[in-house]
Structures are given as structure tokens and as C-alpha cells.
Amino acid sequence: MIKKFTLRGKDWDTIKAMDTKQFLALVPSRERRALKRGFTVAQKKLLTNIRANPKKFHRTKSRQLVIVPEMVGAKIGVHTGKEYVTVEVKQEMLGHRLGEFALTRKIVKHSAPGFGATRSSKYVPLK
Picture 1: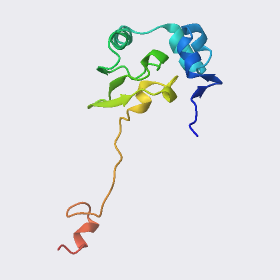
Picture 2 (picture 1 turned 30 degrees about the vertical axis):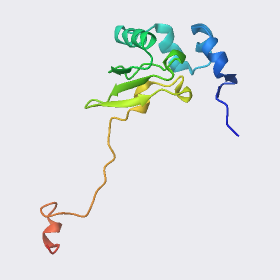
Picture 3 (picture 1 turned 90 degrees about the horizontal axis):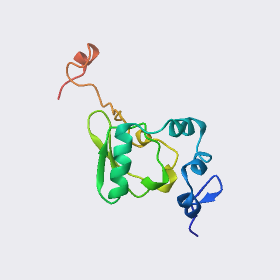
Picture 4 (picture 1 turned 90 degrees about the vertical axis):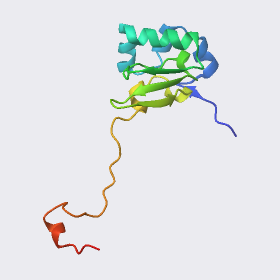
């Protein structure tokens, strides 16, 4: 059984057909406020590029951009401060921000202490 996507009781076809004001009612208050204020110049440029060619890979540094229905299916490179992470926008991401899907910190895995790591490692026998 395939689970059908819904956002606050609305299915995907209904969401695609909505205008901006109707979509605002579905997103949380913080994102609603950001969308009411309008888009920045960089965000407008990204949205026009996605409208023109949705299958092309687009790069952006606008991590705070709220994901709207016209962005679904696009591949976007989101800047992490060091590199661009590829994010494929899916229906479940609606109402979230791009930066939530491109982590800025990497997971650190510590191993055994090495030579010169600390004063106590001086007494670990070296092989």
C-alpha cells in the first residue's frame, strides 16, 4: 500500500493548484511570516531560474528560503559555508527551509589517542 502525500489534510494536486495566500495557511507561523515579507533578490533569482528550467541543477547560498510547491522536483545545491550540498526537493519538504537539509557541521568520530595527543598518551606503548 502506497502512502499518499498530504499536508495538513490537503493532497498534492490541491496544493499545486493553490495560490500563495492559500498555501500560507498550511505552513507554520514563522515560515508564513517570512513568505508574507517577500523574497530577497537572490531568492527571486533562484525561483525564476527554477521556473525557467526545473530539471537543471541550481546553486544558491539562500539557506533561509522557504520551500514552496513550485520548487518540488528541483535539484538545488545549498551552500554550507564550505561546499554545495545537493538537495533534491521533495513534497515532504514543503514549508521547511533549504538550510535544514544541508548540514553545516560534520559528524566527528574520535579514535584511540595517538602519539602526542595528550600527556597521558606518552605512556601508551607505541607499536
